[in-house]
Length: 503
Image 1 (tube, rainbow, N blue to C red):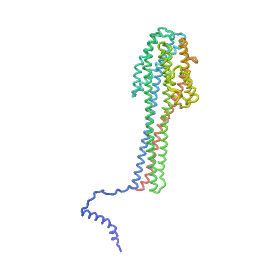
Image 2 (tube, one colour; image 1 turned 60 degrees about the vertical axis):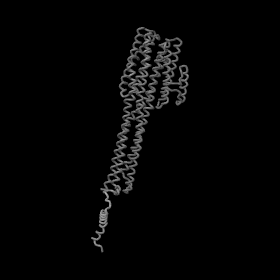
Image 3 (cartoon, rainbow, N blue to C red; image 1 turned 30 degrees about the vertical axis):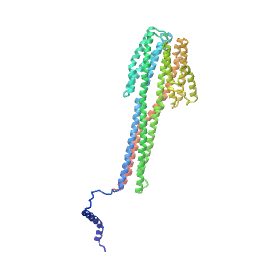
Image 4 (tube, helix red, strand yellow; image 1 turned 120 degrees about the vertical axis):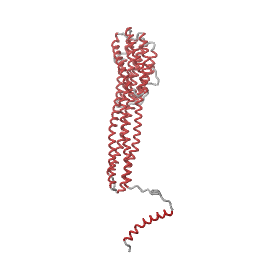
């Protein structure tokens, strides 16, 4: 029979043998192993694995939150930059362009009216509009100067305008004063006044208007760059959302499956809720990013591209009206001013280079085609850009009304030239400046009103899209942060009870 002491001796013997064996090896001279060398790494315990899984999920959640915060704040900053600076800068530059072209037109009109008593009311209207345009141009120039900070191209254009604006006004003022003192009849300006005006007009067309056009382009390019950059940033954010959000959701599901197997429990309610919350976050964030991209596209491409094209068209039409007045006014330069009118018309609505003799027939054919089929657009220029970008309710009808008004104004121009060619200069001046229904100025004003309504539709669409996008960006920031914080809280709530079981 084995005693208790013998049993204890048997149990302790292996340890003693292992100890003596180690000592024997040392005595024989075998190499002594350094502490830890050759030691087999122990597998991670269940608590350690759970801690690592929870830490991985937490890191993914924090990274996802960081990416979404960056996307939301970036979108908010982009909308602020676009709506407070870049879009208004384009609008201000376009307004300056418009004021300059109309300013020159009204100067030409005053010289054309002369001292004819029958045109006294027209002269008074032209003087008043000239003064208004001059005030507007000065204000627009001041605002554009404030806007141009940091935009080298805009500053270069503004320097050219600032350099020429004062000189133009001096030349135009001298021309008008000389003509007024000479009591020149309608259509026959004082030669010295005409010489001064020619210098002013050359300065306007050769320096001021090209610079104003460059200013519009420079500001519009800054807007376009912000649009491109933000669309790219939103695309990158969508990629990170897919990678980090998908990784987090997969990690949460994997952790829950492992806990179910290890602890023989079907579901961990907190981790399941965290998984659902992350899935909701992915859906909400994806919708946010898609919505922001769409609103940016609507604001920039659908709406503001049309605003820029139509604003340019409005200024160019005003310049063509000035060229028409100069054609009547200045016999020696009629060929030049007719060429200017043709160039302006081609910028507004081009018809494969059709000149005045063939333009009306080609325009009538193009109008008939687009009436029958809105997709059959046979013209280019700024109106071609607009007709290829009809997007919003009522825009198609407004664009067609503008096109028809432009067609009527073009027909008036041919009548004016025919009257001049037949020697009926006084009749040409009267018709050119007539505000009676069917008169050239009446049709010009009707076209301008139709064009402003069309611009207004696109401006309103831009405002709506930019307002919606900015509000969404502000709201999304807090919703997304709340979802990430909730997921972290639920992750901790799901893991803590399991870890407590090992204490």
